[in-house]
Length: 163
Image (tube, rainbow, N blue to C red):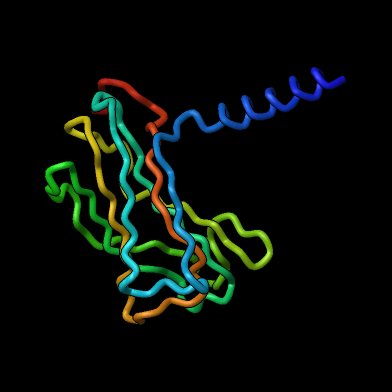
């Protein structure tokens, strides 16, 4: 019986890891007291090995239903190992429809939203990249933002005509 239980556990781990084969990097940071302060700049580092692939760059936001805006403005930067800014721009994420209905995957009062920042992005060189996220709303402190993060995944369709 013990071997059967161990086999079941290994199968569960194998299938749960295998379900997200496109993920290259994903990291989320919890906000202290569920408030994203303007001076709380999030830094993420990841290594990109394959420059022949195309990647989707996504921003993750988790918020509660108490968030009082329908959007969030971010400053998103992507730097290479030489600290060269490859991307440095403002990015708006819509969190709710005009009717007030929250977008994303909501369970109870908590919503998770993943917004595509870049689709089919190609890194020029292999190496370590730094991603910087900063909220740039007019309000210094954004209550009800629970966490924010960044994800890099392989673009689903990889063909020479896509490049």
